[in-house]
Image 1 (tube, helix red, strand yellow):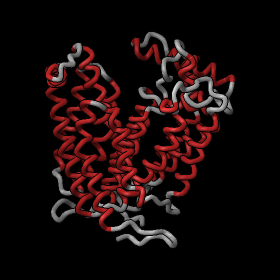
Image 2 (image 1 turned 180 degrees about the horizontal axis):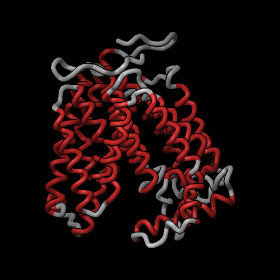
Image 3 (image 1 turned 60 degrees about the vertical axis):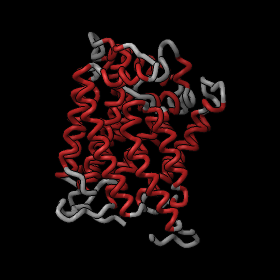
Image 4 (image 1 turned 90 degrees about the vertical axis):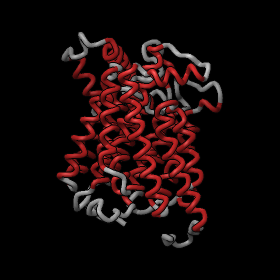
Length: 406
């Protein structure tokens, strides 16, 4: 058992087994949720975090990230005082959800870093095989127009139009596009075959291409590129990514303004033209309250100019939390990428960087910053990475190239 810090009670071995079982359970459900209901990731990761609370701790190395995240969530909650949007019910409060998610998701990450070796390997193998099967399923769905998904809905007496069925299945391709690098690498380290990455990546790309969803197709290439760069330059590349991610968030208003002045938002496909409309309007509102923003979840108050959120996480943070929130978000991304720097080449660090880059990319073009299931997927990436970093490479799978950091 890992020794506890002074004054801290160590989790019992029996409870370690419970935590390990939680990771296996989450791994088994991940492909199912990706296919049938991504909204389920929020309660799933919340449950895992609840079971891992005995392992909750903050070491010196992760303290800067913890401080930034805590300060960011505190500022977001405080900004609700002047927010232009008020939740109708307490269960709709984004501030309350963030205040609960932060400790629970951190606990899940901490539990993954200290999981029992046997359960760790089992969870990674279950996840790798499950997502490979899900990737193969997406290949079939891509070629049949989501026939399996629609057939299942018919069996449940909940039929769905073909176009809506394709749209729902396409959302699952975002999940697999995010998870496949870190899941494939973790599974490989735990003894699963390397070829499982092929149906994951191929299923994502083909289904997204056939269902006219550009972002997941681009994400597969982005993950391979970023992962390859980090593999080649394990020390310098994560540091460069940290600076790049922070600059991207801080300079997003300038980037959007430059695109507008250069006329780059003209003659675009409908979806991108709509995004540019959201972003232009958001820029106008940001200029009115650049420091403190309009308050948490205030994007909802700007309909019809912005529907739900601006479909750009960096702009949403600027719009709602102002420069204070943008600095916190930039620092969080910088610390997250900086943690991946290694003295030697690390498969898990490279794969984690690929998944992190995909998460940042999707956040800038698709999802709202506070969507519960989307935040849960960020936690899931961190959990998988922690499980993979700590697993001992089985004999015959390959050499262990990671540098022990603790």
